[in-house]
Length: 108
Image (cartoon, rainbow, N blue to C red; front, side, top):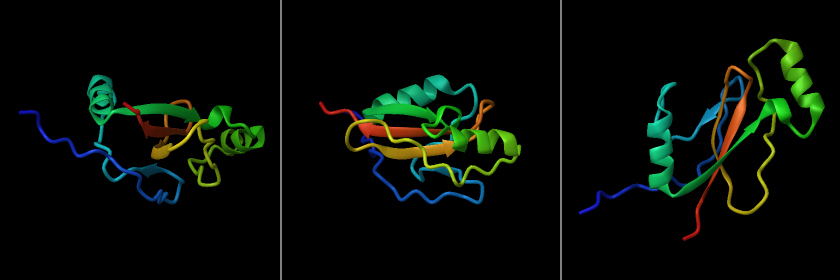
């Protein structure tokens, strides 16, 4: 009997004082948990795209962030991937600056 999987749903994006966000139903994955993360995404039936602030469509936004030397990216509105039904999984910092993870359910 397969275990019941609670599928993640769209949730309001409430960003913290630095502009970061984590979906309330997204498990906490540690660095090095790439396989666990990929397995969770597959079980959820999600397609995930990562959008980087560094390559934002408005260059002024990335310049502002990288020149400020400040962790605040609350003014950044990540570009949404093309297509329907994308929702935000997380906005978090990486060694290369902030990224946004967009997700959508893969249609069977």
